[in-house]
Length: 166
Image 1 (cartoon, rainbow, N blue to C red):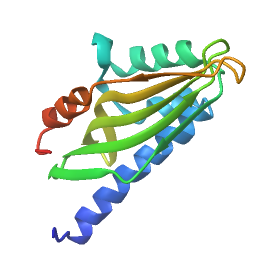
Image 2 (cartoon, one colour):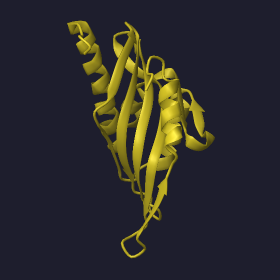
Image 3 (tube, one colour):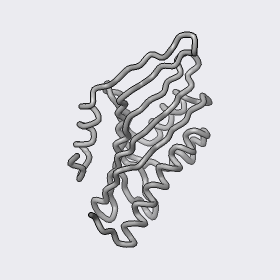
């Protein structure tokens, strides 16, 4: 069992608060405040090779993609690891709902993240989204179409995080 100092516990809670603000600010479309959760040199990627570098381009991509569409992002029971006084990693089980007009989706998977202390605030410096399952819920009459992604994508993304062996 890992024993943490008061300072380390404070760091872990600060990172949890960043992620809590992430979902709230994203789902309430507070783009400027949401963008401040990321480092300037933030990098994002997901399955299929989609990737963005830089905080501003990432916020612009997300804002143009979901704009005013109803979304729900939930994160649960993270695995967090402090690597140094200024760096950490996180693995967050996730559920999201994105209410695209013709093809609303529900997704299940993981956010694989690294964090950096910049000034006195923790920020997300990298993020990889691996979806294990995506349900397209195009209306009750049409039923649910499910896509299940290979587990290897999530495992590879987790293995790529510094300090996380499993």
